[in-house]
Length: 114
Image (spheres, rainbow, N blue to C red):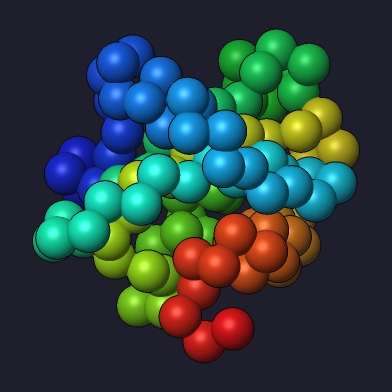
């Protein structure tokens, strides 16, 4: 996923958090900020220390990024969103991670083919 598709700055993260527009399942929390006219979606990924050590956290982030890349054609383009991983996602396979993330994105109305 290219850098233009990422929410990187602290101020951008805070803008999305301040909307208080969140959706959750047992594995992920999704915060959404609608941005009409934006050429493509942007995503921020947060994995806390409760997931495990740095290796485990990076493993989870890679799986989330891969899942988003696979779901990219179906994602709503005019939004910024944050994906926050909960501890239950640690140790899940790529297929399970993608399924759980897809479910959370459907709850957030970010997948076009609801």
